[in-house]
Image 1 (cartoon, rainbow, N blue to C red):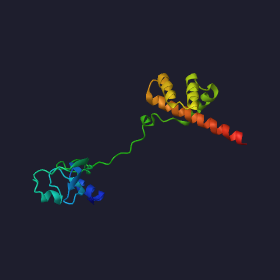
Image 2 (image 1 turned 120 degrees about the vertical axis):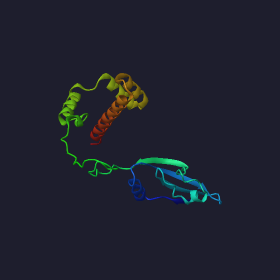
Image 3 (image 1 turned 30 degrees about the vertical axis):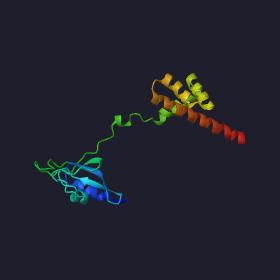
Image 4 (image 1 turned 45 degrees about the vertical axis):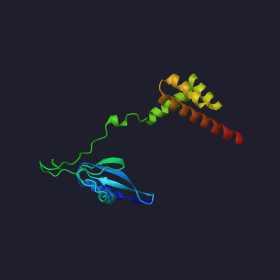
Length: 184
């Protein structure tokens, strides 16, 4: 099996030439000795295929010959503006302004204070009854049943998986703390 693959640098250079979709596909050609010749094609929107196999078969080059399997299409990256009001890269040249971080960027990130308060509450109040049941089920090895209990109490599969993982971590910490005392 012979493989002829274009290097990634060649592909990116070809794609940067125009701002259009280029098709990158895999061609598989059977040969006379029952082997297959496979190679990659980087086909621009309106140019013929560079494949010699396609040239030998005298396929029309008015449109690029279709590869056996299209792997992906790539859009060329945006070129910087030229400062002219016509042409491919038309537009006024501007420098990007670095903006200050917005409060919405921090959304979902737990601060140190909130983490401390939650851990203090957990230490004082302990676990809810359903959390205790989940830990018991995990001790026995019934992970699926623990997930079902959590899902029924919390409402969504994602929350239930997170809670089961949290309870498993708590159980792991308890075992490691308990195991250390027994060895001494």
